[in-house]
Length: 505
Image (cartoon, rainbow, N blue to C red; front, top):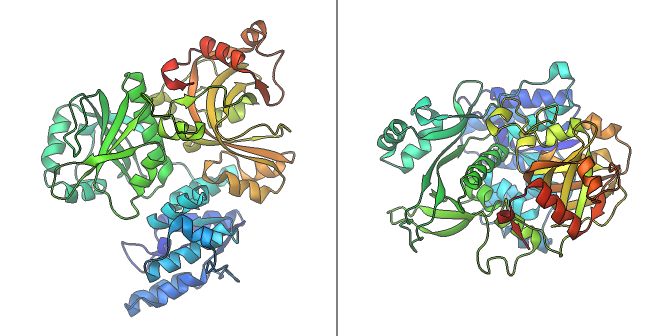
């Protein structure tokens, strides 16, 4: 496996002379997993442009050990590439595009960078699952280490109160810059007993935070938004550990809103060029609806949990899944499938279920056994099934075999890659959604079909095999993916107690 690293990850803000402990850890993992680490030649040109001679010398000393990507592809005449990301506006843009193009043309398997602009462009190109922030790369590649060498995962998302937090934590620095009244606000919400979700890094500082509240009053934006019961994400901050933690916090917010019978979630934000938060929330249906009447122009973003009126009239099933998650389209324009999954992988993909599968864990309980990919929304499923009817927007119901023998979870298919037999290509396709180690993928019988999907919900009442057979939904325990008709799916919805508020026909 060949991985390209952006030299920006080697620049340690605390001291130019050293590589950060996180990056040292990453490089060690890449070495132990026999991953080829390369630099793009354009990165060296960027370093040589630095007018600070001492910093240039130090940076060059850090990169001299890494081989250069030879014959790196050049996007000069690739109109489709520039159509998706736009023409470069500066020399830095040109360098970023060259680096990203090598991934786009599959000259390397993955790219590791802290550059938010590159992450945003990767999303526009449809290759964001192959572009990692450093901590995402650690999470991904440490799966391939022997168990004795696996790096302990620091994640432990906790529910608590604002009063539990240190207002001097570095995560609040930018908020304090944007909001002169931040300290007064923090004191007030702490005294009010405001709840939050957060996780702390190994050094004790906050790595991610979501503070929320319930509101009903109008939003005084331009244009104004009417009075509706909403969940406000008052603060959503994620440090450079990657978007999976931000995705998880959004999942928490959507869950709180749905449980409280709220129709909307919203937040306000000072948007910047290449804004990582905007990039993240756009993937889950937040829409820019206006600006607050402040001097700097704070943007307002609202996400509807289910549509009203003609909201969905022109949308595809996949677009409905994106814009109104956790709602989904289940009409006759999409097919429905039941997919068997063994408990081992069910536990990784759907960590809300305890090992025995006898009950769903509460969200707070599941945080104690934190499998990042298992708690996020976007997932990947591997199968040897020969079925070729699956398409974007179709529904997939997961049947947990061997122990509880029940349909437990529902997802919307985003993309299917049929009959893949090259392990490295499979790893690239799954990207940061992977719960599988390289050795597991290499050991699987090939070819494999890869199903990329959004996990929309777990069934409130898992549908047991005995009920599936008695209701003539299935003839027996499913051994491979099988299609069911609309009538059988309707029975599963009723028996499984899927909330019809989140289904669109």
